[in-house]
Image 1 (tube, helix red, strand yellow):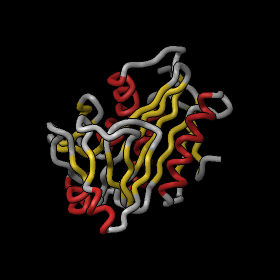
Image 2: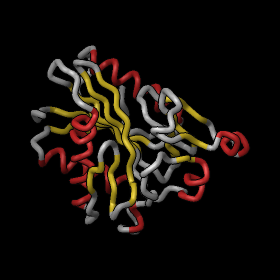
Image 3: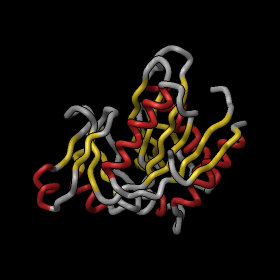
Image 4: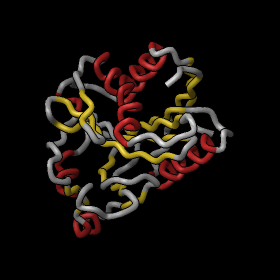
Length: 219
């Protein structure tokens, strides 16, 4: 990926529906070349976010418990399983141009996640990419990813568990076979917060040659 200018957004809205609509809108605008490549950080209030189709391959969720707890379930534009969001989870999204061809899923996830992994290393956390779509620390899952692409644009977005409610997460989410236990990054770095992670990602992008322009909100 050739380095150039990259807009980095630090969103403040916590509305899950508005945040997922923003994902779809930015993807379309980058694809039409009416918006530059960008990275977006965002946090949702408590909800479940599901992929476009139910599949045992990706896991699912406890539908009865979600109704009982009155937890909203929102569908995203990318595939994959179901993830739990709350204010202890930082979401990250990369909207990147592609060279006129589709990329393999493994290449897509590796392309974006390497910046998150390097940023965590800057914070003293040794993370690894685990195909097809996870970031792990000490054999536990701290980030799951999903993607969408055209021949012109790639969206890779993922979670990052900082200090999320893992009890509720584990009660609601039904993981696919072979998925390791989840963990919060605060287990390795107590006091970690969204600001420190976002700052580390910006420094990583700048260190990779990007000219980073930051903004409080995607417009």
